[in-house]
Length: 220
Image (cartoon, rainbow, N blue to C red; front, top):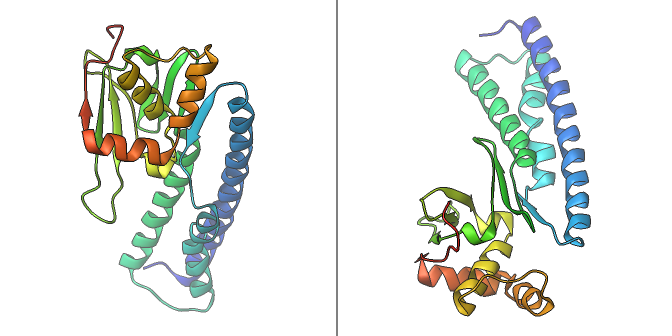
């Protein structure tokens, strides 16, 4: 168990660091979303985790701040609570960092996905050979959609509900229905993709099929 003096200093410093880091990350997130909106007008679609920002602002600095005031008032805790509080704070900070580092970008250059656990990958859209839709099996989990190349490489994977991202699914649905990939320089193709770029037009469509293969024009 921490001594009161050490606990006050430790949790005070931790409160300051987590608050600054949270506000800095929030500012970066807002700036990125504004840049994403500008790029969308240029035909570049970037989706990020739709974080509950108000929840993050209050909750992440909350652990060290509560522990600081408890220590300040001389309330003792055991080592288990101290360790649990440190681990929870570290986990939430890691999650907050991953919100800004994880994204999916769709442009004329192809599909670019960056995940916290892997390097950035870029594939042309017509390298997608298969799509698999996994329905959530529990109320506390989320649906997951994955896109694979003909060689079995994972091109992109995300939760369409959390990311609110239906663009790539709309493009794949266009490929399935028209037996060709959309020409994004063709206004008619773009209009149809825009029409399909909707939760109602993609979620139920792929939930019912679960897995589709044989779509790729190139082998990767």
